[in-house]
Image (cartoon, rainbow, N blue to C red):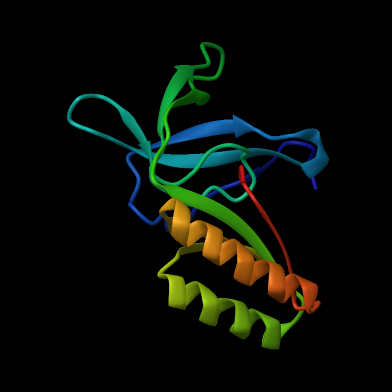
Length: 153
């Protein structure tokens, strides 16, 4: 696997107009970048339109700045301008049974879902719902069914 492995979003929740590259924390090695999808609002603001799977502090619905890399022409992440209303969680189920149980909880909370390999990214809208969702995930993790973390919480 090359050292510039890039995670992409095949079916972003809100669609795609442009792609923005985010450099990832070295702990994700060999994955170095995540290509987030955005939609551009009428006023020119960029909204994250996918469920980020690896990028830290970025959530579905966030307004972000972008910067064009002059050497590659690639749009790059320039930081968050405005926090959206969703919280992103990464879930790795232990097996097929744990996957089904985790997805029942996701469905219960109305989470927006994207997957990459064995990782399920989930966006939960609202602080209270995200807190309750995190509590449920923690119980599943305590039971040895999943491992999870969040983009920011």
